[in-house]
Amino acid sequence: MTQTDIWRLNATDLTALTRSGELSALEVTQNAVARMHQANPDLNAVVEDLSAEALERARELDAAVAGGAPAGPLHGVPVTIKINVDQKGHATSNGVVALKDVIAPDDAPVVRNLQNAGAIVIGRTNTPEFSFRADTDNPLHGRTHNPWGRHISPGGSSGGAGAGVMAGIGALAHGNDIGGSLRFPAAANGAVTVKPGLGRVPAWNPSQQAERGILAQSMSVQGLITRSAADLHLSMPSLIAADTRDPFHVSMPWRGEALDDPIKVAFTKNTFGYALHPEVDKALDTARDALVDAGYLVEEIDPPDVFECGRSGYRALMGEVLTLMQNDIKAAGSETIREIFDVYFQEFPPIVETDLIRMLAKRSHYAREWSLFMEDYALVLSPFLPQPFFKPDRDTEGAEGVHEVLGCTVYSYAMNFLGLPAACVPARLADLSSGPQPINVQIAARRWREDMAVDAAAAIEARVGQMCLPLWEKMDT
Image (cartoon, rainbow, N blue to C red; front, side):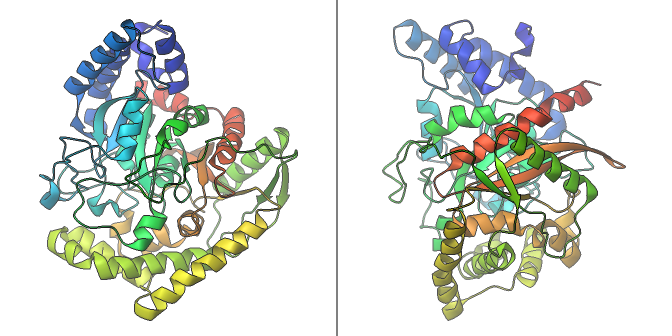
């Protein structure tokens, strides 16, 4: 490892060096900034360069440690923040031209928690308009590209985060997830993430003018996209630190009580009539075998009806969007995003008025079914997408495009409706006619047991390897 290759280190390796004093925060930040300036022009993952702020903060951290202050758990780790979350003094544009001058008066809890832990923000990452696409493009900042090639969407809505961290821009990338916006970019780029459960990570934007809808509050979560599962174990304890500005945050330790071995895993390939691609099938087999070899007891059994739960939950979310956001989308959205929402409403007919209240009540029924099932099976291994990741702008191609992008992804948004944690980890690198492409699987876990989902992701990663390594070989050729 040369001085110019520091950017290749994961956060776990970086902190071992920064906390021991072998590397300074300034050295790490200088290297991270250089990598960002090298890789980002081809990707457009980072849309606000915070190099100057980052270098100044690194100097301050080094001076503080030299003066006897303790090094934080993420001391000197370069991170990126998604542009839909408040960072003091910067625009929370959410990819919308009309919001480009909405300057955050203070940091959101996730930004504060990361910085309190010693992380250094080097840039802010791209998102689609209103952060409501599984692809990343907007009229304000343009398109983000996938580092694997332009045959694959970078995913969304945290597409800038996923593309950036896998290209080596920062060791950790902040993102959020209301229906898959951490897991879509992880799957598209071959990254690792865990969508936290309801209430696990404190959330609030000081710039917001009104409270979000109840489903937006209960389905949306903040999280991180990383290159390795170990980095989630390192960083998530800092991210979940309490913040009184979120009155519904659940303050619990990252690690839960150890379960008796063997831990039972429900394994399913059920795609509810959608074709299961052979490469996804192979990825699922690899993930299953990795867990078996790691000591898990894996049994092929379907969990409670994820299709009905997921579709119902997303239709309810569309009812809330129709009620609370439609005027803003029409007034401030581009023609592209307005047309996409029109097709969303066709694919997921909004549940509104009294029926929406009934569905909010029924949410407890679905969650109870899953809780009872997971008394026996603590984890559920499933597809994330039934097919390899889609091409850029697939969701602009009418009903068929939206159906491929979101219609089949019930394992994703069902977890948001249930409020359960779910990890997403690469289990195969497919050699498709269009080019190489990572294939991710999903691991859902019991409520409050994000740590168990990450443990399982680590076991799969140990078998498959970190997907950034073949990616960097490809990028260097």
